[in-house]
Length: 208
Image (cartoon, rainbow, N blue to C red):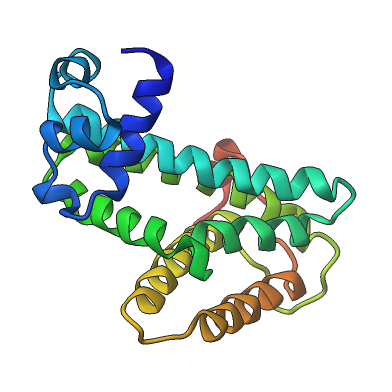
């Protein structure tokens, strides 16, 4: 199965009206307008197909984040962080279908180790990127309580996922979710970064 067919198959899988539980390889073959045999040569199992589709959604989000950074290469770390977390939150109306599929994948990952591995890898990469941007954005700020960039990155990822769900079910409007997100980001920009100690320094520090 060539790359164009593979690409159409993953789109079909991700957007199929039956959802992740109901979609089959036969459904994907029909939506992608290829033979069942072609889909089976590309994906040996339904789980392999879902993992591929999940990876594709992550790629699309990453591409949008990168595109925003390229358009404004001179932007600050704080601005770059805001663009990145806004994209992964999937709050805009045009990303609503993508948000439904993403949350469906998260739910399915609770019972699928293959999907869980893919999601954990995605979150780990985002956490590292957020940690770096938060560290850079917090430099020079003057606040009594410094922030821990890694902990704040974890918090921001959890907040983004939570806002995705709240908008999707109608508890918050996209604008209300954006306000929550921007308020949180504003707090991060105002707080200084806690100095990072090496493992050896932490071990040698006397207990209190």
